[in-house]
Image (cartoon, rainbow, N blue to C red; front, side, top):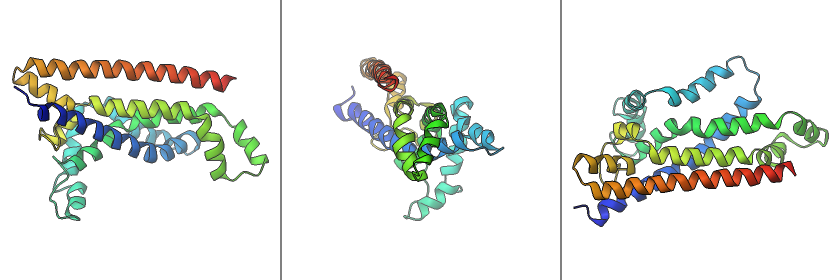
Length: 228
């Protein structure tokens, strides 16, 4: 029979992982999305394809290469050596690094689409008013693209919450360290503990519905205000 810690530990760990991943992706993904939306470089779409790779790669393939990269013989092993550890694989820090990679397209693509939808006219007007590129970005681009930021943040968060294959490959099943919600459900099913499996799966179902409903409502309101 599952005790309270067994139930709550994966939930809290999953929320912590999804929150950190979303925050990092908003910081890292925004300049990438801006460059993809505004650059005229010939190799731009090649970079966009690399960012979008997690959308089509099987989770086991992506998880395998991330495991190699985070292991003792990869860049993750070198980074872990800086603070006396041997590897980032099978650690919470490794899960964060892996989550940033496999959730990146879910954050970058909506923000890129929002930047592209703005068009050139607002930036030309800002230039005639002698606004600096920095001021133009924060006072024109970001407010007009807020629906893209909202969609990207929600998609990045929910995708990280629901991911299974990649987190199992690079994190394993260590309670309190790497055992997230999706792995906990799988673990309960494997051991025929149907009650906690039903409770966690039902909670994720309700959570997903509420997130989608909230995003649709907010996007509708933001779009209405923008049209006004």
